[in-house]
Image (tube, rainbow, N blue to C red):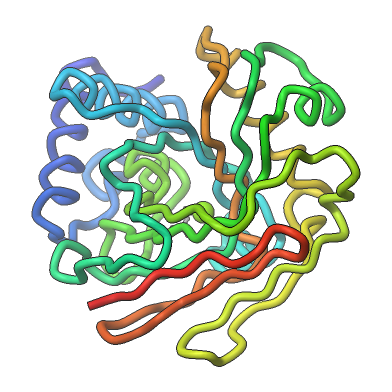
Length: 261
Ligand code: 0L1
Ligand code: MG
């Protein structure tokens, strides 16, 4: 780590304000060129601590930049991890208030809900055995950085652009499903805006959970039973505007949708 605890706390305050006020800021490395990835995660951890102290509930975790399409779109080449807070969950079919966001984009994802704690080095099979169900999800990302321009340190500090998440469809136990082969279709206002198969995420969506559990282990933590894990967008993220309606359909798992107003 390159930054002091007091700078980390200051940066967490800057991100928190930007998120709360839906206000654009410039990437953190402009003022702190020495900031490294560990500093980014330290800022994110500080935010998560503060949010929980404020009474907000941690419901799970997200992997980001887990597909080639997302990495190419953002010009970054490392998966990143963030936290999911319960109050950012939007019910399936409900409305996202655009006035609380800056320049949102949507991602179609396959989400997992765990039935057992996972820790350390786990395999894809161990993740699947510890999965209560898998289900279709839409992540609404909203980088607090102007024009979605950032580096990996800054986007990690910004909780990997997490803004809202929607889960729904027909949750299924993973047994008997080959998640690599499930087709995923995203539509905006009835028009096709992205297609992929589950394997777009690290060869297997459960590989994103494996990587998340390893990242948590590096921070001395385990993934608790009952966690929701968003495994990452299977295609490029797509911009949305007021009036838009987005659906993500995952083969065998049904459809989840959200509107923007
Ligand atoms: O969920 C994501 O893939 C977001 C990762 C951070 C980069 C971005 O804002 O696209
Ligand atoms: Mg995502």
